[in-house]
Length: 131
Image 1 (cartoon, rainbow, N blue to C red):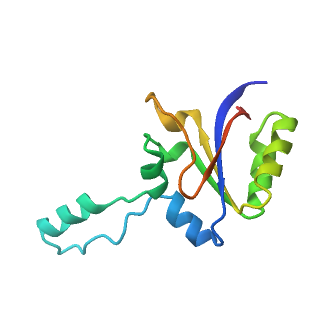
Image 2 (cartoon, rainbow, N blue to C red; image 1 turned 90 degrees about the horizontal axis):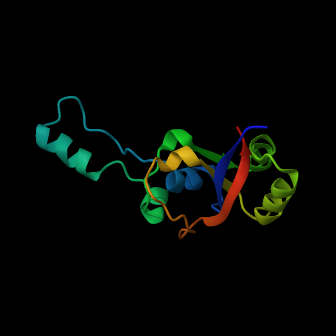
């Protein structure tokens, strides 16, 4: 079986909207088509905001990141983790959380990264994932 490394984070947000606001990129509202170059420049300087990446302080490619909320968390673990014992361990770790973030090792690019817990998410570690 081919495998890959997956890095898992979990947290409790209370709603999918609150979890998304923290875990996903926020581009804000773009200026209108008739906005001045200065308005566009100000928008480009302010956005995107991405609290998770900012607190983690590493390069992240969101194409290799998954965000799961509610009952989707357990379903995702069944599909993603290669080892049953690891899956059972993670399920017990996230039992009281409502959000699971999964980073494929490609999400880090070729940049050095020291993953850690953030203000809102607990770093659960690296796990063997299905390829």
